[in-house]
Image (cartoon, rainbow, N blue to C red; front, side, top):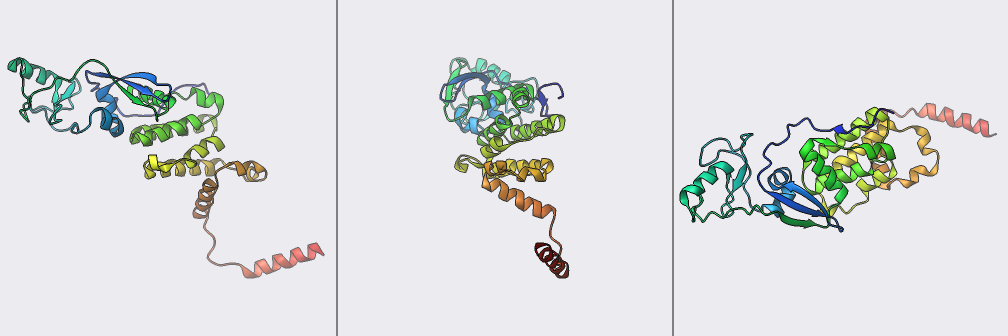
Length: 280
């Protein structure tokens, strides 16, 4: 087996705009603690942004003070708590100094409310702590740790992490998870089995974007078709898979190998007659 290593599952440059404020994310029923840059997390995930920075405008265009691009690599950002418009942190700091004790927003002219640098806490009991741990690693390093998956020969943690990506609406993280699964298959010939596949099929889809669920289901079907052998269906192991999964596999097989337009009736008649003679 190849040496175990982290999968580099994204080629995208890491977002340098970490921001100046940390938040404490409490994940799962046991409230596992994760400290993360608020701006970084919200830039990645519309789901988290809806809780941490509700109403904040998308980070694009120019800073209204210096008229330079907001996405300058070496400049942190902040935003007005009233109109939700974005500014360079350094620009607004200088602006606030000029106004003294009662600064106004350069755009909406409302009172500038300083974002509290005290670490805020947000609890997400419905999320999985192991999934968030993988997400936390990825948004900072661009890698996904697959050691446990390879050692245990179990893709369930990666499928679970993908479903997390769908829930928090971070499609790039979902793509990174699928790329990691492909790299494992390429290096080790391991592929998802019953438990991992069941995770993607036996779930309440009301909490997820349907397109994201269909994406991993198609991925698992295509992986299975690439790895499957006929003898896999000769025992009772196949019965442990979700029925919907085998429906999708069957449809995919027919699409890949469509039937011939002409049915060779004479050939089948001859075959039936030969079988009849064998029985006699």
